[in-house]
Length: 249
Image (tube, rainbow, N blue to C red; front, top):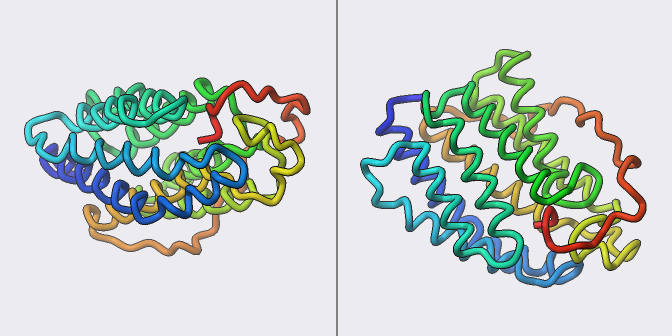
């Protein structure tokens, strides 16, 4: 990507775009969460990312990695329940991938992988459990493959990743929840779209919109995503514990 000043502007713009989108989608996310959760996902995500956008808005001299870390720190303090540490802590940890070389195609792959690993570890969730991991996993795998194997430009790779995330959201509808409050419903959770996977898609769509602006390009959203990762949803334990909200939002 460009110099540090441009990267700082892009991080601040991305935070603002995500905050605006989640505010716009707050009621819809609340409706999704009302069906299978505790109906607070929309409000929590909107409040957290608005505070994060405000926190980085005037940080003119901070390194890009520090701005990303500030987003994570703010989410921890502003998002309630298990979601704050899940989202914010994972962003904080992954932000270190930008510390040395800033935001590049290579470090963005490292960030995506580190973020996914932390989300899966903190939420004890894997693909097929009807959580945000179902959208995030194919998106990260697609982005990595597009960059490292297919040698695509980052913008085109991100477009394919967003497409994969959208397919992941659709994947959550017919499966049974194995994590979080939704798992209490058992088979009654089937037929409902996971709110955490949905907000993950919205965040990625705004990252793509920001990248299109700063990389001065457009991508086709009907790009063909690569195959889903190898993890088999049938491997998910039938007695998946409903310990808390982690992984589901």
